[in-house]
Image (cartoon, rainbow, N blue to C red):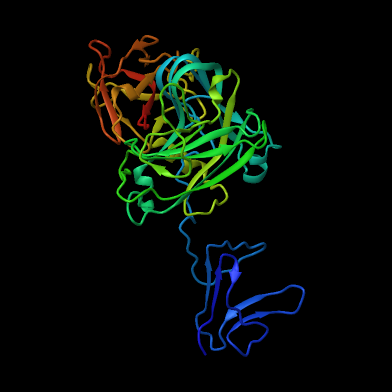
Length: 441
């Protein structure tokens, strides 16, 4: 007897042999609880083929053999910290005039060029009655608020840049490029039918894909998903430690001109917003809150991938790491100022030779960084005062100014030297540190 194939094309079953075990095919039992059997009388291999359709199982799925899917297993979500669980830099920050890129929630930033107005980022806590909490167990959010309406600005870009090393299997820019699916929860006070732009751009800003997100329930949590087709063959997408795909939600152009009238199509332009999209940032108090952001291979929006806390924190630390506990903002006073001795939980170092920090001042990272950390990306803090560019001597003066100078840095550690006449051999000192290797656009 021949093998059995059931083919489902656009939700239609084309070939079914039923109600018999004498022939190859399918058996439906006549009992209330029915079973679908696929097999041959001789036990030969059979195939269930589903094309352009979904298979939904309510109950248990038992597989004897192997199960394969492009977006199954750990790290299907290429967004890091998509549940907004980690905000190592603090719980809120306000950005005013000028051209700035500011991170708050790990791996999420706002790039802006503002002449008039200001923006506040917050790491919010969801209530148990919120839909993302109930349906996906999401407890934190990233909220961006127009603290003062942007009445004069060039651009406003809330984003996460996905590193090329994390999208190699997408093969974007080749003939075998894979489509992607993006999904997230969002909340905004904008009126129903307002349009927010979702954009995907490459690092060189030569290609972009913009699609509308239409508000359907003002002031309430809403779920959104969309399929992003693979970009055209021959376009440039990073396969290294720089940006492959920059995901922008709620981006808007003031005088910058980065708009397009064409939605849901890849374009050879640098666009971040659709023509006619609502200018969410122009009015004081307007906000956009996001959680559960997922970017995965394939054309199905699967449930949010909740990775183990320690693993997710390690992913964040490739881009930003500190000696503080992850929930303690840099510059916090962590030592008992009246306790003497070591005190607090700062890092303790020992000066072997006066003014020589190359042996005793090396900071070893827990996670190798995306790129070499520069002087501007490395900071030290006094655990007793919270002051930057300062250390606490053990058995010496309360604090000593310690600007970071003459660094030697790589992906794994950072070393620096002390100013002249700062230390004496055998002195111990305490400090905290932060190291930033993020992607700034």
